[in-house]
Length: 258
Image (cartoon, rainbow, N blue to C red; front, side, top):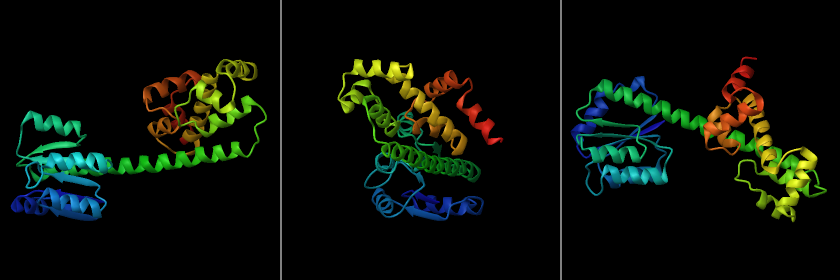
């Protein structure tokens, strides 16, 4: 894990390097810069996991650097270390999703604590990224299996398309167009075959896939929710509990215990 410390005051920079007990942290590489330009160049050539940054710097501020990082390297955990206690700066830091806004002079203990939190957050983000890759690969595998079956009618075509695109935003109109049928007609066909509407079929398939991911993937509930097409985690939880009688977390924990 790599940290980049940015401060235009050399003494302040050295104070951080000397004061923090780096042996207690899990950073493999410690990079330093004393200007916006130097920091930007390092970002272009290194993978930076944690940014510890002052605000006032030559040739560009720490806020401008954080804005660039938020756009280009959103996986980087950002911390401000500054002598500015203005509300507007703190508010902007919140807007930029910074982990912490630490005022100078900060004790070594405070820096250690916030850096530990930054590492923990970065490791969580890395784990979530790996989980999402696993979930996408699993969904892709299901989609390939569906493609191997030659659809014979509009309902089978719709089923195959739905299973291949469970993470996407699906609409009855879109699916009907793919199958070259009227949306109302497709809904009637689904009711006849499955006893439910197209939308309810999509929800049902997503919940069944969520069960598999929770049971076999050792994934977090948040990751599973996103993997089956629900960015709204509470909504996903409500749908899952309505169908299976338990929350996704309860279901996952009960199967991990086994």
